Figure 1 (cartoon, rainbow, N blue to C red):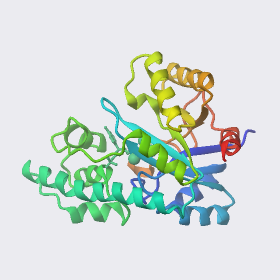
Figure 2: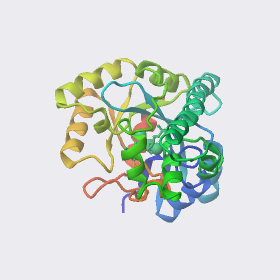
Figure 3: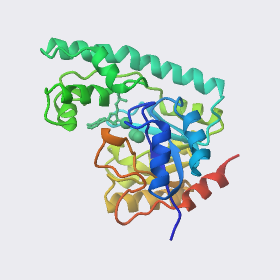
Length: 282
Ligand code: AMP
Ligand code: FE
Ligand code: FE
Ligand code: ZN
C-alpha cells in the first residue's frame, strides 16, 4: 500500500468550509500520511494545522497559494515548507488581503445594483471569520435562493464574465515567486490548465521563464487535468528539471465534488512527491 498525501488543500482561513484542524483530522480519517495546507493568500491557518498534525499524527507541510497576474488566464503559485514567521511574507500577504477587503464590498454593491439585496454581513457570517472571497458570496447567493447552485453563482455573477465581477490586485509572477522563496519556501505552479495555454511549446516557454524567476515545480496531478494534459505536464517538468506535485484542491463543502487525497483514476498522490520536495529544500 503506497503512503498517500495531498499537497493542495484549503481551510476556512480562506475559502474552504472546514477548520484547519478538521482538514487534518479528515486527512487522518482518509489514511493520508502528509498534507499541505495551501490557503489563498493567507497563512493564518497554518499554526492550527501544524498543531493538529501533531495531535493526529499527520505530517503537515506549511503552504500557501498566491494568485499572480497572467493575462488571458489564471495563474496560481503554490509555496511549500514556508517559514511562518517570515516578516517579508507577512507584509506581502497583507497587501493581498487588503485588496480582497477592498473588492468584496464592490462586488456586493454591483449585486445590489442588480436588485439583489445581499449584505457584507451575510457573507461574513458564511465565511466563518476567515478571509472572505467569491466562494462565500456564491454560497450567500445560493442560500438566499438567488441562484440554483454555487456554480450558477459564478457563471451568472462572479466569474470574469459575470455581471458582478470585480478584478483584484495581483502580484506579477516574479514577485509571487520571490515572496515564497524569501520565506524559505518552494514555489510550484498550480493547476497549469487554468493558464489557458494552447500548445505544449507555449507552456514550455512560460515554464522556462518562471523557472528563471525561481519556480521549482509543477502541479501535474490535479482533478481537472485530462490524462493528456497530465502527461504533457509531467513530460515538461521532466525535461526542464522541475519537481512534480499534485493535490485535490480540497475546499470542503465549497467544492463538494472534490475528495481529499484524490485527483483522478490514473494518478496517485504518494509520499514520493513530498520526499522530492524535501530534497529540494535549501
Ligand atoms: P477569490 O479568491 O475571491 O478570487 O475566489 C477564487 C476562488 O473562487 C477559487 O479559488 C475557487 O475556489 C472559486 N472559483 C473561482 N472561479 C470559479 C468558477 N468559475 N466556478 C467555481 N468556483 C470558482
Ligand atoms: Fe479557492
Ligand atoms: Fe488555485
Ligand atoms: Zn487551491
